[in-house]
Image 1: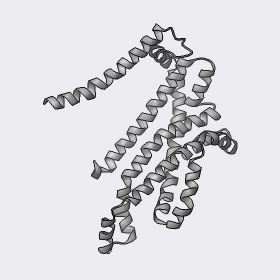
Image 2: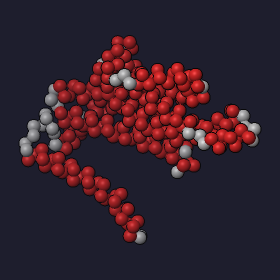
Image 3: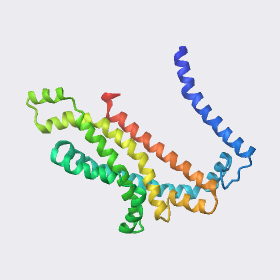
Image 4: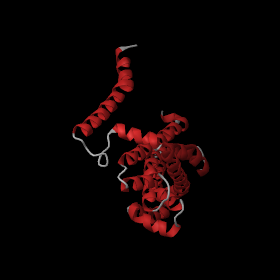
Length: 254
């Protein structure tokens, strides 16, 4: 193997895990050296022990949060795509609807959560609605930008060849907007997990957000950190699922 390739392989497979390991060891050492109370900041070894001990509870609550996250994200995707098309291709809709959506997006979702709970009750729906509110705007804005980013010369070329509006949409505008769609989806999916947890903080009987709330109130901080770790893994995994789908679908920009 050539030296530059070997260096890149070492950087990818050795250096990054080594940095994480050193950071964990430093965390463990500092907590023990300064005798930091467990309820304030647990050591990584204590978090690992709590993860094993609470594995069944973590798995059950993770499934609840994952269901809320994925369902809310898919609902946001289904709602934002047609509206993005309307805004992109209708100047009147762009002038009227876009400012309204921008204003709604500026409202903090934490402030909306109690109202959503009041409107939708104590089922999973309030959490799903908050996920939709969090995911909707990033997807919509990116898709609109994708439609707007079609090169003018290509549009003129297709029109000069007599292509219909439907054919231009199918052959040019939608493929051109797909990279922007996946960018919006990747941003939204990380927000989706946050939205589900916000909803569970306000009203829930299950889910990782609920578990964090309960365990911190009982000073079981290692369990709360274990739940945060599961949330992080879930968010990263969903992001990479979308990135994999993007590589499979948007093959021309790879």
